[in-house]
Length: 147
Image (cartoon, rainbow, N blue to C red; front, side, top):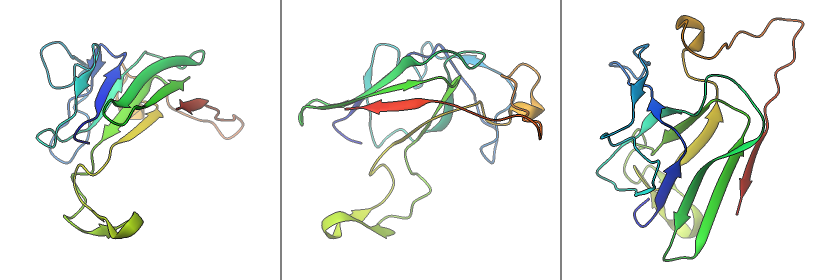
């Protein structure tokens, strides 16, 4: 993730308790390592496995994030209907635990996952976006990753 920059249109994030479950509170991103509103460089010094709160409900397809590698001239934009964006930098991956393309050994911070979704643990938190799907209902979301 070194050399990459991330911008996310989220004013809040979900803090976690031990074990990675959201505490149930919603915190402002201002003055935290989760403030990606203006864009910021990613670093191996910061591990992420957190939900950034985009809205309180599903909505129309909208631009929510941009991941870029300026030195490579590559940029990915994310559009979604979902109210949350989970960011994960792979801290649970063992150093050299996975061998990938051209024999490259992947470990923590070798990449970043950006996952549009509902907020984690929503059924157990009344203030989170509604996340119950009944047997007669159909779940649909739309996400686009544009390069």
